Amino acid sequence: MIEAPICACANPQHGTTSRDGQGAARLTRPSPPGPVYAAITRTVALRNVGPVMTSLAGFFLVAKPALTDPNFRQTVVLLLGHEEGGAFGVVVNRPEPSSPLSVPLYQGGPCGGPGLILLHGFADLADSSTDLEDEAQREVAPGVFIGDASCLKQLAQVDKAARRVRAYRGYAGWGPDQLEREIAVGAWALVPASAELLFDIPSDELWVRLVPNRIPEPSLN
Image 1: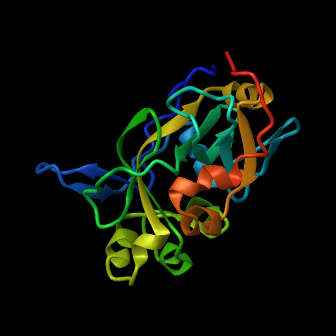
Image 2: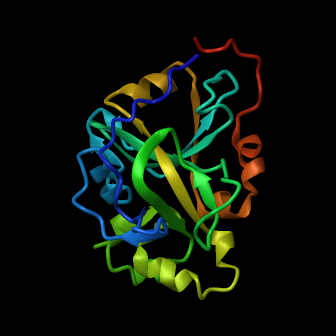
Image 3: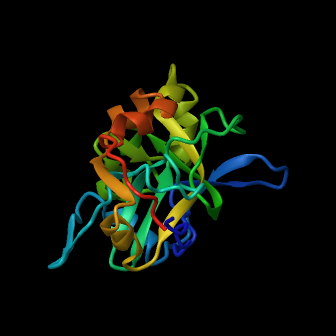
């Protein structure tokens, strides 16, 4: 069985929420990102980060049946950042039973963070984001954007916005070369992410839709 990913990422605060004194969830302006989380700012422009490495940011990691770790069994992870220093993403198919926000809340992974990460499918709202400086900071996969405080306020006024917006509590992080090793031993399949896959397929069907054809495999120990 593959060990759970090491939570090696710096606190992911870009486009996240935190709690105020009364316990209510709120979006906050991010502090400077750490070295691993900084990869999220280059997910569009940086696909080739070196002569021997290609960034997988913007891909889904789809857990293969042989991956039986309870943290990641039958999960789909959207990679938000990937570079030589490690990788960072959120589990996108584990909804919470309730949400303190006006949008659905998901269990983003086993690593704790100071707030919630917001993803949405509205390009016009991404263009108006005030906390994110350029397109590479906003669009993490085709049609999938990181939200900030201004986005959340506007999403409250969009009809049926909940269908194309998600908040994530926690995240998954990998140290240097850790994700590459897990892929090499067959723990994960790679699928290009898109807004249609993330928002239009029910979360309880996403893994079944994306997992490769099931050929019997030994458990990964």
